Image (cartoon, rainbow, N blue to C red; front, top):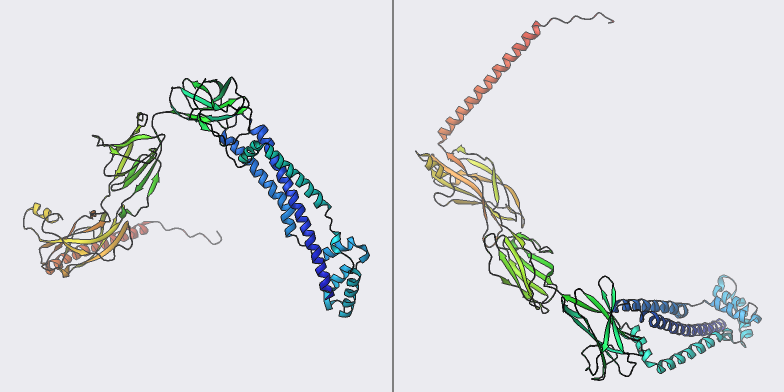
Length: 598
């Protein structure tokens, strides 16, 4: 029970100490934030807002870097002074030692009691620990442990931060215009600090026809200082600058300029200053100024040129049967299979009234095809079907009634789907057979996109008795009655298969009406996957000349006798060669035998 009371007192010290540290850290963080805002104000007011060469985007980027620096620095201070204190939790021994240092009269009793209580029976007996707890508690009963916490730092920091905060509030209320501009620029908006002369609006940048004049007008607040004349800094793309005088226009109505954020222009009350760039020959930037007032950014003047294609995007949607994924290209030339639809997206440099695709082949031009314009009329699209080779160009007519100069002729290379290539590899020659023959027909085939089916085609006809022309017509697969078909099963094993090799058994025994002196003309046909109608590939034609069994036997006997005679002749030549070699050996002198030892 005594140890619990001591631990409660230590917990109270720990909580109080952390509260004081966190409060002091919060005040320090507030001071740091205030100082960072003041530093931003000084840098922004004295440097960024007065830099005549800075643009709106560059000014905003610089302010963004400063804001990020402020946030990073404040986050670091907040971490060091508040968050880290919140996460720190000193253990009982550390707190007890601090209390001992603040109350030397404890003479180590408190830390000893805490450590022995935590050790328990493993170190000393219960009686000794209980006696020490009672002694420490009775001695420390009249002490206030929390009086060791120094709150002087907290008081000083709180006093300084409160005073500076009240001072800031007073200054902000006194110059609310500066305060509003400061926080607006902190939020990266287009705000300007108050000046003696105040520019309310300025002519916005825009596009102007090449070589024509451009008028720059600004409106000044009549409640501010009104100079005799104002000016505008003109800058070209090379960075060279010049000054344009803006003269005051007597009794001029307020122009429809671009108002500065937070400064609406009272109708008819503003004083107008105006100047003219006589000939705009290139893109320019301008920034008006009047006394100490500087417009928040450079306005951009863009010279109007003829319409042109900035970029092309061609998406080729291939025919479904090809099984090929869409392809995207930034090149205008087209090379695609017939049946492809090319989605052309032309990004233009300006708005156009019309965009048309002009197609032509080597002989003549076709009717122009209108392209679809987007809402801004700066992107033109069309789905162009590829049917034949030729050329195309994109003709533009812009809102300024200019046509694009010298449009490019892009080529169209339409690739036709070729029929399959088929070749019989065995027997690959005409054969003389009987009607009981059973032949394996081996073949190979390939296609550019894919095969779907194959078949053995054949036609049976009688051998003509006379006339070579009739004989030739029989071997022609396109002449005579319609051929018969023997499907080849299991030939195509996968979708989009481009190459095949197979074997089909041509069993003449199954053919009805097959008699001697007939001829079976056969070939292999393959179909590709072209849609809607496939291409047909056909091999060379070969024939089986059907004869009687006796005739076949006679032919085989003749061939056998011819082979036997050939073999016998080879044997006779071999015997003659051996006899000649033996005769040469007998005529050679005997080689003397060397004596022993030599």
